[in-house]
Amino acid sequence: MDLTTLLTAVSALVIGVVVGYFILKATLKKQAQKVIGDANKEAENIKKDKILQAKEKFIELKAEHEKVINKRERKMNEQANRAKERDKKLNQQAEENNRKYKEIKRLEETLKRKTDANNRKAEELEKMHKSQVEQLEVISGLTGEEAKNQLQEALREEAKHEAATFIQNTMEEAKLSANQEAKKIVVQTIQRVATEQAIENSVSVFNIENDDVKGRIIGREGRNIRALESSTGVEIIVDDTPEAIILSCFDPVRREVARLSLHKLVTDGRIHPARIEEVVSKTRKQLDEEIISIGKRTAIDLGIHGLHPELIKMVGRMKYRSSYGQNLLQHSREVANLCAVMASELGLNPKLAKRAGLLHDIGKVPQEETDVPHAILGMQLAEKYGEKKDVCNAIGAHHDEIEMTSMLSPVVQVCDAISGARPGARRQIAESYIQRLKELEDLALGFDGVTKAYAIHAGRELRVMVESEKINDAIAGQISFDISQKIQNEMTYPGQVKVTVIRETRAVNVAK
Image (cartoon, rainbow, N blue to C red):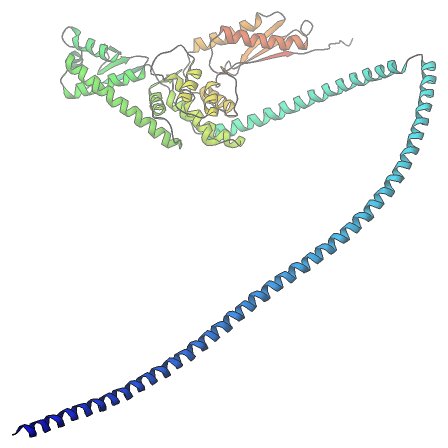
């Protein structure tokens, strides 16, 4: 191929490429214009939609704004109406006040006129009264002040007499009804509480299988029995009583330790001083645990909660104490039940009364010996271990050693007397009992003017007859007080002794 042909072909190819380029450009331009047109149309449509949305939003906002405006206008109108009504009411009230003010003014003027008239009449009456008083003074020969004093004195004496009569009648009626009600409550209380007849002794009997054991307990040259007596503090009596050993001690705790220790020693068979000391020590610890257990069971049985651990121990130790042969724990349980019943009859707190009744004799079981009376000591212990004031006062006052400040105090005192005085509660020797009654009667007969004296109600009441010619009512009351004080200071007795002085006047005539 020659060069001309090649150039021609290249030129044709170039022209074709250029033409194709321009055609392609024209096609792309048209497509671009079409795309732009479509985009413009779509943008116009979007614009229209947005404008429509904006118009709708504007309309909504405008409607809400109009609602707010209308609501505010309504509120303002309502406030304006209320203000108008308030102004109207104020105007009406002002008019009413003006009317009332005018009426008051008119009444004041009327009252003033009447007051002036009354003052004038009072002046006239005063003048007439003075004139009459002067005439009466001339007639009676007494001044007005003297007559007034005489009248006041007469009225005062009459009022005193009437008041004294009324007070005496009221007190007698109150005493009569109070005694009847008190007896009724005490009888109901006693009837509702079951009691046990139990008397404690100061000795315990330890039974053995045969008398050969006695020799082993005594030991060589008495070493075993001396060691046992030294460790327990109990007197051990080994005599001719068959198959029995007597343990004698006024302390029931020591007697119980000795009895349990003897039982262990005899059962074990090894009896010598070292073994005795070991067994007694263990038994004493076991008894201490038993005492705590007894205290807890007692509190649970009585429904008493929150007792201090030391008070629980004292309650447990009561089982091993006695008063006039009466077991102290049994007595305290009995008093607690009586207190609960009596408190419920009187409308008091039965739980608090039961608590005071159980703890009233804790002063009898102290850890250390003291000269403080058991009622005061018990009150101090109760205060120390956080008991309430009413309970502490009831404990301290149940023998009248402090003043009673709580209604529970007389309840505990009465129930303590009931428990101690019931038949079979306490052991008394007949000779000492009769001697105490005789001493009571002799003490009363030693007073001037006393003719007869009788100790009744098991020595809890002393009735004294006096001569009516020598003794008047005032002196009779003084004799009653003096006898009670002398009994209190010079005699020893359980509970209380009531002193009743009787003075009677007899008119005797003989028909012939």
